[in-house]
Length: 291
Ligand code: G1P
Image (cartoon, rainbow, N blue to C red):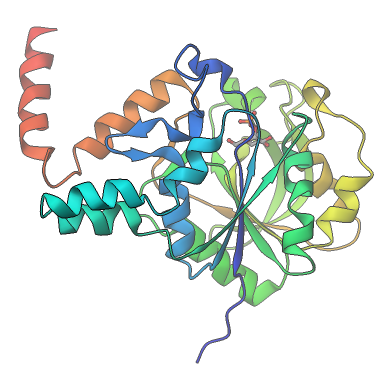
């Protein structure tokens, strides 16, 4: 039997979702659906596909709906059962047998701080971090590829994508040397640099495999870009102690934290939905004819 390397995944979900107000005034942005699946479920599904067993969600105010979503829904189950909707019951309960842990990030001090909050659950194991507003096409295998690089290198692996120069200030940007096809050794990182400061156009997208020594580095960080404790700065500090790799992703990723990205994800994933795809495609063709 092959050795399992990564069994834990952390999902930072404490953000306020201000870009989607008023929709996110009382509901978590992570629960905004792309077609009929909440954003965070796409990320959990991706982790499940890599045999991850423990799901650690970093929450905050107004995030109870996430806990309910991954739990049993007994009343709903009864109602669906009375209507003979067995398949739907299986669908709504499919995550309920898995291990979910919830940690409150009391104050929104940044992504690095959110990851640090997971320390008591992660302890000294390697772990994945998935940002649920980065949606990776469910047919892509990015996280699996990252896990296999981790298995070989026994070092942190970050997902990278090339971005246009005018977009570098939205991301953590790395300086890196190619070591194999689509695999880089990272030599520097900067969170949200200006186009002039950016060391390249290779951006970190929201998938990370980290080792537990990151916590020591996060613990001693000062606030960085935006006055927040940045995960990028923690990884930069880790570079003095161990190699960190980047895995270039050439597949489809949607920035669902942005309204246009959210609409693109909804449109493209609806075009892959077995029930909707034909009628939706027909509608889009008619619509574009009218535009
Ligand atoms: C975060 C990270 C950034 C990364 C980005 C990917 O930024 O801090 O390094 O490039 O996610 O989506 P945020 O989008 O939360 O501002």
